[in-house]
Length: 334
Image 1 (tube, rainbow, N blue to C red):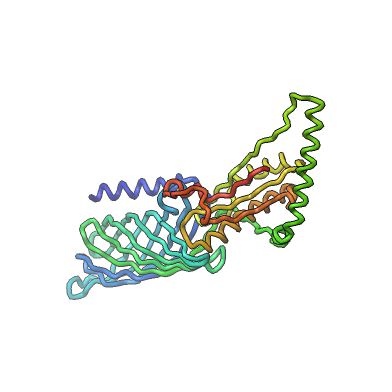
Image 2 (image 1 turned 30 degrees about the vertical axis):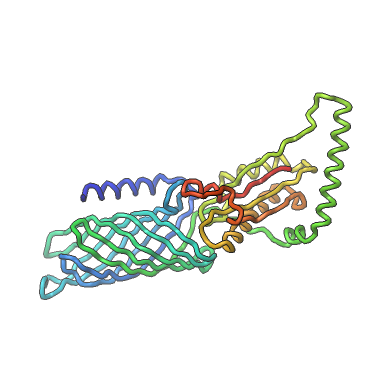
């Protein structure tokens, strides 16, 4: 059994090192307490350490996490009068997030680990373990939050410990996106009649130009089909990755001089979380795409925005495999 769990540690570590997703990380310094129940006869003891997680896609878990915990534990004196021991624990596994509101969420953890007990008067003792549990996260700002989790640590020999910890949650490493100003978008939505009039004029101009071209040269194309590009996002994220920033820039450069274009932006989310939260998440995603388009020369009066969230899922009958395809903004040329 030890060989099987040790192999799992190695494979999980390689997956952590080689994963290619949104390049977003989270670091969490924590303090806590271990409640012991094993044959080594250590007392309950305090621990401190660090968890580091990396966002991943195309997997059941939303994050891969590494943890390192240090502690010093006394023995039950009536059973083992040899003083205290240094205890080091290394944990690796997956994190599955379940957002409840924009600020608050739950997460589940499942993985394996390794425990080493060092005592000057005895030989070192090492044990493989399984770790699983639940936790809470509370986002104070986009760059800072709090976390707490409860883990069950089961050793390969059957001994069991409980870990209760609290700490900070500090995300970093993603592409920073400045949120665009919303005044122009609101004005555009409120002035609906004016927009309809502008679009009618554009359609009339297109019809006139089309008729002229047909008269002069019959074989010339007069119909331009609708085109669409899709910007995908990470789980519970409104950040545009460098890959899609490049696609948006290329798209904008090709369309910046197309005066008759109407560009429709439609935001979607997966079904995890409340309807209200997903509606707001879809809106943030769309506004970030608007910001990138206008940054590269596309005028705001050419944009028509929709925030559908999960209420109108892009894919019905959502599954774990297809859920990631709902986290997107569609850009359609009309």
